[in-house]
Image (cartoon, rainbow, N blue to C red):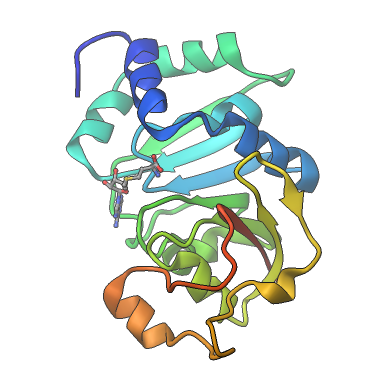
Length: 204
Ligand SMILES: C[S@@+](CC[C@H](N)C(=O)[O-])C[C@H]1O[C@@H](n2cnc3c(N)ncnc32)[C@H](O)[C@@H]1O
């Protein structure tokens, strides 16, 4: 990772991945989110700009290094956040599949970091939201998981759509995806209709 201040490092990263603040904001507003867990976050700290309490988890050396300066990260969030009141930012430099000793949260964020929803759903409150993409097949695993209900998609412009959901997770010929293959390949299937992000509610 390049040298520089926390703001410079984060802005540099944000330039690469795109600014996800509006995505997290739309989800937080819609579902009344106050706490979130972001396994495999790398240094995407945008959730803290719109959600008061966020725990980031990543075991990559560069991420661990970045989050060592939690004081400067907290200052950056304080100066740039969109909400009133305290913000709480925590980091665990651990494997998210290991026991993380966490209180249940309102939202889990899964972005390009493996089967986050499956590994960490135990930290999601019943009624809580999983926001994920299908880059590695995490959305597909949630779609076939009886612990989750598919409740919406988020467009590239951060618009939440809750209607017409039957059209998603369909292969041509109307076959179901083979979850075993998705697990093996760690890649989402080529569905007829796709979204940038998917939303699931934990129902049990
Ligand atoms: C491709 S990056 C995506 C980062 C971020 N979510 C984003 O979208 O910009 C994947 C990140 O997940 C982390 N990761 C993958 N598996 C992990 C695991 N089992 N435990 C902790 N971190 C993990 C990697 O270290 C890496 O930083």
